[in-house]
Image 1 (cartoon, rainbow, N blue to C red):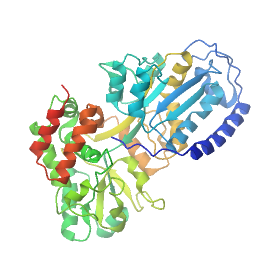
Image 2: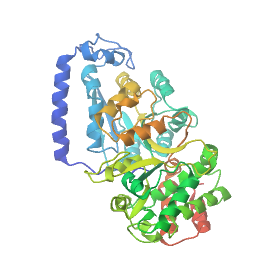
Image 3: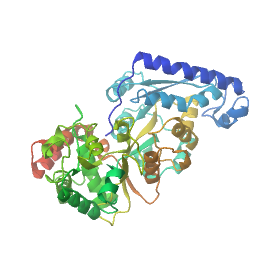
Image 4: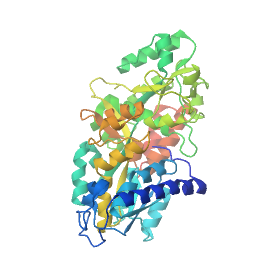
Length: 462
């Protein structure tokens, strides 16, 4: 689960629109675009030829003067960079992309679709929500070029954009969750090395605890109505890193239950790691304090030496103070969380977003083809740091941020055992409901593993 950004003010939206408009006007003057809206479907290069800097958008031409609507949960300032990523495409092709972001996206999208007011596109971060929309009968299958563009992604990503074996939604972004944040400066001063295996990570944790001073781990799972989601990530990391992708897939579909010995064993591994009273919760208190510490604040003690490590996703970079140097020799950096079982090759857990169409007009298909291409992904990478694609067609030299590059390397590794965030794959009643509640009780109240697992299994929809 990925937290939703805060809502933008009206002022920020207006001020962002001014430079975007000026850039669009300048680009239009530099490029020739005399194509009309009568081109022959799906962005096949119909209409007059585009020249100059616009020539590379010829495959999408032929639909000038049309508008395509996009609805998502992405808000300013991230949405400003998203709109910037397609501004040149829009100026050159004449297809206006009208974007709307909302804090209530997950609840509003089904209402709009059911009411006959669906957007042309929705950017959906949860495969479970995608399946719900497909069930409505309103989702339109993608054109052939969008399907062909999936060849640049690891095959498993196509399955997350599919429902019952049919492909509906192209992946757009990705985030890397299998990271451990630490202070290179603190490690160097204490003589610690980045561990390359789970056993080495546990040995380092024990060494730090026995040395006194800062605790090896800090953590926080408080997140308002979403309290508990970081704990789901810890369990998912251990299940994937212990048993590999096949068992993970069976677990998120409930063919392997939470009460199964494999999952309760994984929970014992999490408990030995993040519920070890000698190892946590550096800077905040005991094990129970993890339940009341927000995920945003969880890593702060790393900067003061009160804890040494935090397991959190790549997007946690935004939580560090602005003057924090992030890098291999900086105030903070991250390393890949090792597999619990060394026999599992390079386990990587991540999340992402999927472009889902509710219309099949030619201009909609042209936008769909572009936003599923490595050319768009490269444009998006250039707009700002903190965004990563698992599209293998993106030139990795475009990533100027070291965390983005580290994440991109892991997410595009063809040998990696990649799996999507498990709670996002589970039914919402579990992955965004009972599992959050039960894992929070596990940390906050010391609830037993057996009861925690049984309560989640009992809540699973029939």
